[in-house]
Length: 171
Image (cartoon, rainbow, N blue to C red; front, side):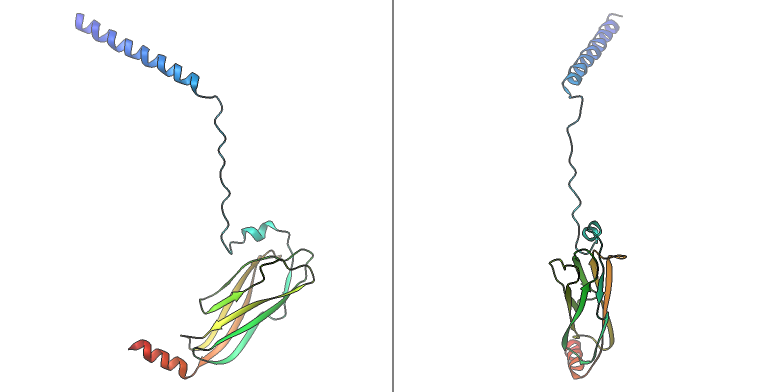
């Protein structure tokens, strides 16, 4: 019985001490948590997030399809797709991306004023290509109704340059 009383005394004392220390700790914790700032999610190129935040405008291309005609394999060509900002706000081209690595666009990085003209230069490299080719460039800008515009290049790739390249590649 004496052991039981001693055991109960130790348990009760432990509970009282731990309860007392919890109350003491609670008194030290501030009643309002510190402000946590969540950083803004960075926008990725071509995501359209930057373009969606800008006032909308309109762009009009002189043509949206260009045909290079017949090219020899390995030949590169460039073409400027000219456009006009026909809206009432500055046109900001956020990003332009070719449908494959053989189609590389260059676009104006500065805003295009209403009424002003600009161009997107598209370089096509026919290396490793054969036959009819149709490649696109998707342009992300602050345009209405859609933030994406698509321009297209076409070519017919033929000739010795392609044949020689494939022969060397098979060795």
